[in-house]
Length: 307
Ligand SMILES: [Zn+2]
Image 1: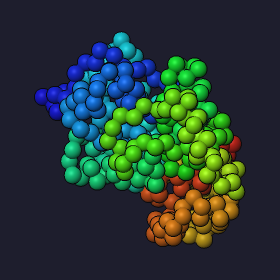
Image 2: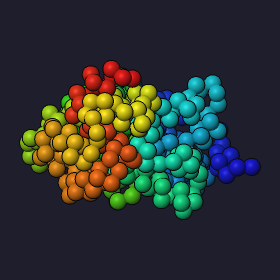
Image 3: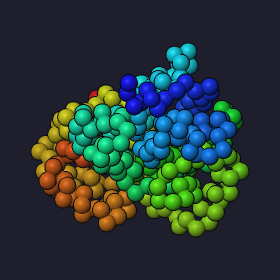
Image 4: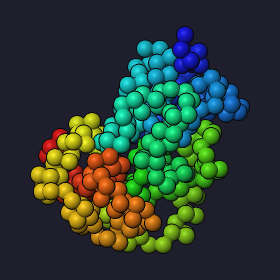
């Protein structure tokens, strides 16, 4: 019998999906719904032991367990949750990881699996530790679905503004330690509003609001449409537009929205990006580099012509 089956059991209740919700958010809402008094009981019920919740924010970490937790009548198979609530197809735009590495996201705890999972998380959430939210989405979810959630797109590297409302995202205080090791449901409207007010009071004006918002919209589009593309197909499209892809061409193109914007986005890692482009070109780059490239070539109107 597999470990997954050992860990899993049918659940008596489970939240229904809110559009745009992250898989972690579903788990956190389940924790609240369950009435469990401590996280450990929820870990036990869902995974049989402690599990890597940070991976569940963007990745389909051990997601096949959903098919054990929920009967078919719930119409929420794991495949649907992978598509709707994780950034798997967006990550797969990058040739960084092998098929075996993706399979390992399903495995409980092997050292190799852990390292690759960490690299995948970094490719999607480079510097993000805190869960982020848009106060307008919190309000709309509350009005429409009776409960707020953590949105997947808000947690992705490069997304600083809500692609729907254009509102600057707010870092929540969760997790309060470096590691996401508990179930934190998204804040209610009043908590979100007061967190947003105090965050805004110390936010300097952002000279890069326009390019960040455009980038957020492209990433949001890719989260929904990336399965129509592959790394090879994207590189072919870049070559079609730009000719040979050497370091000069790539840097010229990626900085066409402004060198200062790229520096703001990458901080000290801008040099690391240059070295990586020199060594690999557009092959095996994190998906954010593709989002930037698409932005420089004309954004959603350009890429949607091809997929
Ligand atoms: Zn929003």
